[in-house]
Every structure is written in structure tokens, then in C-alpha cells.
Image (cartoon, rainbow, N blue to C red; front, top):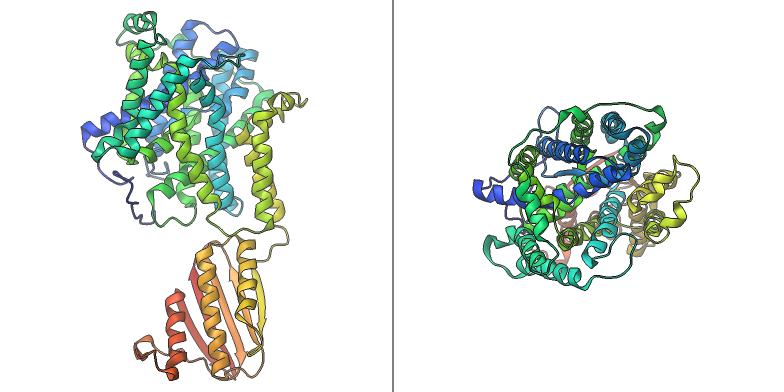
Length: 571
């Protein structure tokens, strides 16, 4: 894995050691965030009127699988794990498919199909490197942003105190939500030292206490925690598996969406941990997807809901400035322990509505902005504007037209239109592939010494850079270097006729070959450059020195009157 330069706003970067007490507290903080997704598992249970015994087992095994998945993802050994702190949660992408399976065959069918779906993600991990031309920084940034947006329909109703099927805001819930979120934000912005690390944990404690004071957390819920056994083994008599071929496509679609989400999450981890981040590192993503697929299958085999990396926790790690993989081991260990500590697990199960609303909103702020930054990190042309614009517009339309899309007759296609993330992601992939048709990666520019201007060079390179989705700073370096070559050729009358510039681009390299008939280009050794650049006679030396500073590699040759200057830029 390439060397990383830790951003200054991180207290503990991905490779940093974390003191044990701090590690445990941060792990506990992330555990609170992870357990908010237990609601998705409970939705599946309620969807087919499962028993309390089934619910308890399903929740316990989901926590166990999530803990193992969190640890696996942090590994970077033998091709397994991205090496980043990306905690696993019950994946909302599987709600539709899991509900369908639960209604058809109960939990055994959910377990069996979940285990099978993990194989789809494992298959995606094997070919993802060949698809890097689709998963550009723009598409990945869109996925990251839409992951954050997809959390909004769950978080905001909880923040406002909305009950299912009602549209009336609960003033008490809203007040406690504002206090909880305000505590988190205030500590993050104005606290000194390492207090920022615990902003969410402190905010959640304040949220629990305030909820109790305002009657949102009653004595019966506290008694429910006290009545639960401290230590107990899950009831494995519930664990059975079954399969139904008709559910393969719904689970495959869910797996694809979870894969793209994980791709975006790991890319986010790469970006927030590397000050010099330029593009997604596909080997890390490949290993992360493999880990995710193995965790998905393991969850089904253990009797839990499908697990996948949690965007909200990644946003939380950035907000608190702690992204060390050591925290992953702490978080994973706590989640595994909770599967056998019912009394402690109940504390998370009874989480008040304001806390379930404020915490993800706090994290979503960071996720959406990171996604937008990634989308705009490359130059744009009409192709990319339409890819991102169409995907974003129709993705967001799901939130306003959910009742319309739910009437789509084809049950295999309908799940795609049930989520902003699903629809935006699939549209972006399809449109990126379609709009790549006819896009050349090698172009040519003809310059006429004394006639062509710097504006001609600028316009040509900017249009091509936008079409390729190149980094703006690299294109502008190439423009400046090419201008210096053109001016030197004209000043010294080196070319007998037109100058031909061949430009090649890929995701890692930008290469320019400037060719003409005439005299050799004066590309002397930089150590021979005259430092007295104020002398007009040394203007060509100044140009050569600037060219060397702009390009990562410069060479030249001249044979049989054909002279070339080759420029290479790392991208």
C-alpha cells in the first residue's frame, strides 16, 4: 500500500497507535453509532411478525457478525481487508430483499439467501480492478455523497420525532434532538485538546439523560435493561437455512448496491487518511470488497442480517479526528461481546429517538461534503456534467416519488427505485460506460511558430483535460510547460515548419511529445543553468528551467533533423 501523509486535522491516523483507555472509549462511541442500524434488523422481524425469541437471536447474531466484519475490514493480510477503520452495520440495502425472504420462508430463508449473496460481492471484488475506468473519482464521489443522502430519510424523521405514518413534529423530541446535536457540534468546534475525540459519546450521554428527564426514556425501559441477563448464550435452536432461486436476483441487486457503497466508503477512508490523495487505490478496495463479501456470507451462516461498512461511522471517525485501525479492533471486540451480554446490548436497543436522529445527522454532514469534494476534484466537461447531473437528479427524486416508484410492476427492478443510493449509483455506472464511447485518450495539436498563441494551447488542453476527467493542477502544469516550449521554439527559430504535439492520457500518466523538423531543443543539464535570469540573453534557459520544474520528467532527442521534446506528468 502506498505511503500516506496524515492530514493535520487527524489526532490518530489509520496507522497510529491509540492508548488502550482511549481506544476502548472510542470503540464504545462507535458501537453506539453501529447499534442504531439494529433498527433495520428489527424491521425485518416486524415485517413477518417474528417472535421475541427470533428477534433476540437475530439481533445478537447481527452484532456478532458485525464485530467480526469490523475486524476483518481493518486487516490488510493475505489479500483480506482494506486496512482501514470502517465498522460494519446491518446493511439497509438488504432490507427489501430480506423482507421478501422473511415473508416467503421466515428467518431460515433470510439466513440462506444472505449467505449466498456474500458470494456475489466476493465475485465483484475479483473483477473490480478491471472496472476502474467506470469507478472514476467523480462516480465514486457521487456514491459517497448519495450514501450520506440515503441516511437522511431515516435520520431526519427521528430528529423531528415523527411517528410512522404521521407527519406531526414532536416538540419534545425536537428539543432533545437539538440539545444532543448541539452538544456534539459544540464540542467538535470549540473544545480543546482531545475532548473532540469524545464529542459523539458525550452528546449521546447528554441525549440519553435529557430523554429521561423529558419522559422520552421511561422507567419501563430502564427496567427492561435491568431484567435482561448479564451473560447468556444466544438460542441457536432458531438457526436454520433454506434457499429459493426466485430470490437470487433481488439479493444480487442488493449485493451490487452494497458493493458500490463499500467502494465509496473505502475510497472515503483513503481520502481522509492521506493528505496527498489523488485517486482510489484499487488494491485496497479489492481487499475491502472481499472482506465485505466474506462477512456477508458469515453473517448469514451465523444467523444475522447482511453486514456492510457504515458510512455514518466513517463520517464519525473524521469528525472526531480518530481513524486508527486499532479502534476497529476495540469496536469489533465490543460488538462481539454484546452478542453474549444481553443486559449491555439492551442499552443500545432502547436508544431514544432523538439520539437515533442527531448522531447520524452529525456524521452525514462530513460524508456529503467529502463526496462533493471528490466529485469536483477533476475537470468537468459536458459528458461528466450529464453523468453526475442525471444520476443526482433521479437519485434524489426517489425521496419525493417513493410512492410512484413503488408501483413499478417488475419485482426484480423495483428494489433499484427504492433507494436514492441504488438508483443514482446504477445510473452513474451505466452513463459513464455509455459516454466513454468515442472518447479518445490520444489527441494531437498542431502549432505554427509565430502564429499559434498561448490561448490555442490553453483551450485545447483544458477541453481535453475536462473530457478525460484529469486533475486540474496537472493539466495547468502541462499548459505552462507547453507554452514555454512553444515560446522557446519561436524565440530561437528552432522549427522549420509546424510543431506537432501528441498528448496521451491515462488515470496515472499524462505524456506530451513535441515534434518538429529543425534544430535541437536546448534542454541542457539544470546544473548548467545561469542563475542570472534578469539577463534577456538567458530567457531560453529560464524557460528550460521552468519546464523542468513543471514536469516530472523531461527528455529530448534529435535524429535526422527530427527533434522531439518529451514531457511526463504523474497524474
